Image (cartoon, rainbow, N blue to C red; front, side):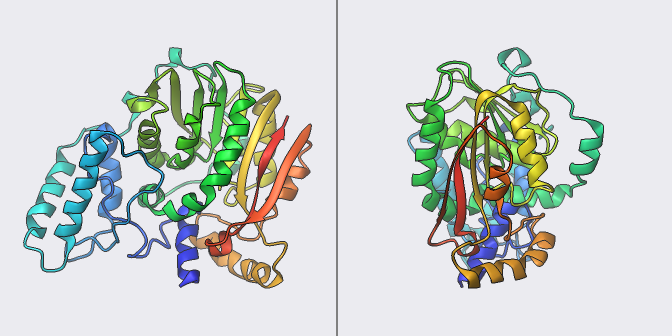
Length: 370
């Protein structure tokens, strides 16, 4: 059971739907239409892919840890989840009617689905984006499968609750330390591999600066709508990444070729990302390039076990298959050593193990200063 659970977590952490087994990912967490606006067509399409031939969801409806439920809209969302559970029950008389309603809503949603109309105006942002060098883009921004990306984005949004719940206390302390060290106003923060933005809730700590310009970078374009929704729920911004004095932009990019100018960021974040990049060394070098002098690099990565030889052997043995099936995720990387060798001015790094995440237990986390 632990092996199955771990492989499901890996699919969510690394970017593939290969391990999205029927019991792992809720099929229709994005059925609520009001919060997703133009995002809904792509997100619903991703989740619809997980339905069985009989029209019933093949996934458990385990709901989201770490989200805010203090507004009426979220309570309505919970009600819809309960309704969907009832409709999905074998033999339910409501099943057909509910599914027809689901499909009708999906078809009636916004036409564009790109989310661009929701993003902040360029004038609202502090940092200017740039086009990365062509050679770097060709080497590292590899072709992607849109359907696989959409399916995985749905899984990331819904399937990492247990991992994030266990990681939350240490993550929260790390984010508070980072946010307290930044300029009190107009800090530029880039999150590399932002995914569905599970870190959004940490940006609301009282230590956070005002007027943050947050730039989320991810090669999976299907993550954008989920990231915007998590930001809205955390009340970092209003709908679409704007409001509350902060801005959020979600842009396409890879860690080895960041679309940012030199020395443009006060902080760069990287959590559960360097396991699956093409080159961790090139990625960390890019982080250093875009940081201002004295800028901070917050990292949190699962790594090869250095304390359990049997676990390490198993991680190494499973890595070749995992790389193929989970979008490049490596179980055997020594990411801490890569960061140590990068030449930061100072480095506060901790190695520790989570307890309930199987092959993802060994972790390095900390803050480096440029």
